[in-house]
Figure 1 (tube, rainbow, N blue to C red):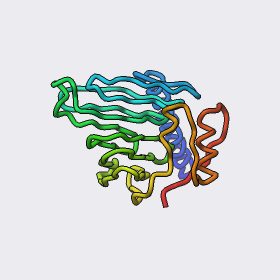
Figure 2: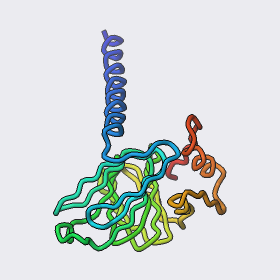
Figure 3: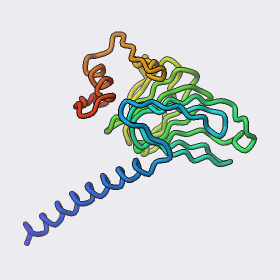
Length: 199
């Protein structure tokens, strides 16, 4: 009986994981905006801000008078916020929502990249506020980057990733080989990705 109960429990957990994976695939398929592998696309947002989707990325865009929200389902985006040209959005915070937490723009230019078990944030102008799913908060200013998962945020470190991808270029300077391989792999179908967890 105990063996049977254990089997049912394991089967239930496996089934839940499978359903979550299917749900995630459905969200990507039905996303407002998405790019294919190797494709880069720039969009003008209703408030006058700009978002650029990197290769194989998917987002939803939800703007209201209470909040300007981008939901990142997969991939990477570059966000360039601006003072809202539409009075409707003048006091609405600008937030990028991910599966591990959120990134709030404090008048800035920054990128958010979903790398599976964590999210990578690079700030190129001004400051962002990161809040994990569990409520941990941390600021990150221009020239710095951080990684976060639902519980933990890494210390701020000098930004190592270039924003050259927004101009269809890959610029590398003192980049670890693992990171370089991962960057190249994102633009090719079927290339394995190496993980570098938070330490």
